[in-house]
Image 1 (tube, rainbow, N blue to C red):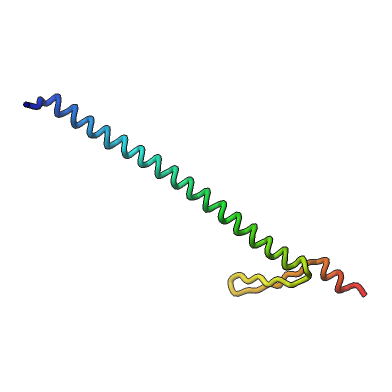
Image 2: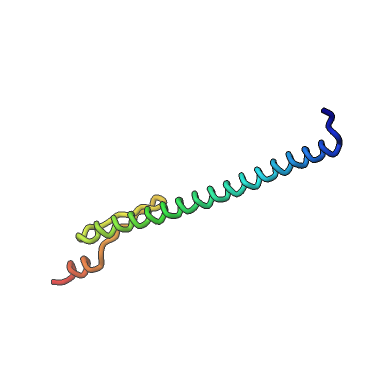
Length: 89
């Protein structure tokens, strides 16, 4: 079976189109996956922040001081109502 130039060109174009379509499908899947990972990351950050703040709130609720350290600096937090209670004679 002898392949003509026209047949070879058609096969070449078909292979090129197939590879190009696979590239676009892969690119679309990659974008979708990246969007999914960003969403999970944002939700995890939000949940972590919420859990941290909830823990601080729970400790301060019983008039306990809460120490927070950032970059080798520490601050102690206490609920203002607890300070007011201690100030009253």
